[in-house]
Length: 171
Image (tube, rainbow, N blue to C red):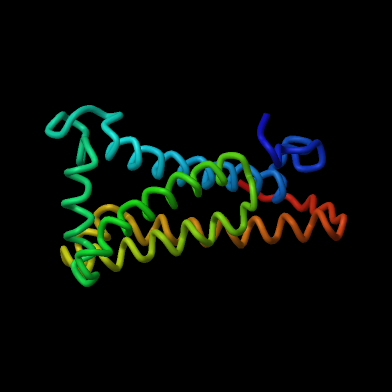
């Protein structure tokens, strides 16, 4: 069902001990799913999936209110470019979410996610003040995406080299 599942050699427990490879694979999955669901939730919100504007637990509720917010963050862009920036950000979030879930070009999707989140965080800081991206952990999410890219590259190298890194981690 999912690509890059946990193999027998990467199982989390070996003789009751946690393996580094197993812990890394589970951490990778947690990062992939948390980043992907955050992107999908935001895209769903701007398309009304969480309810109409003004409903509890919605930020925008529709595309119009999302555009008002996006235009505020992208104040430095020419007004003619702002609609395209909102569409590109939304498309990027959707594409990265799908790639993160499926594992398709995982390293590239993780790097793209990190870049997108970093741009978002900087735009938030410039438009709303530094407290806003810090309160919403935008830079933390960006760092998680970049960490995932490193993990994906390491995993790909281990597969290519045929390595079996079964060292254990003490909990």
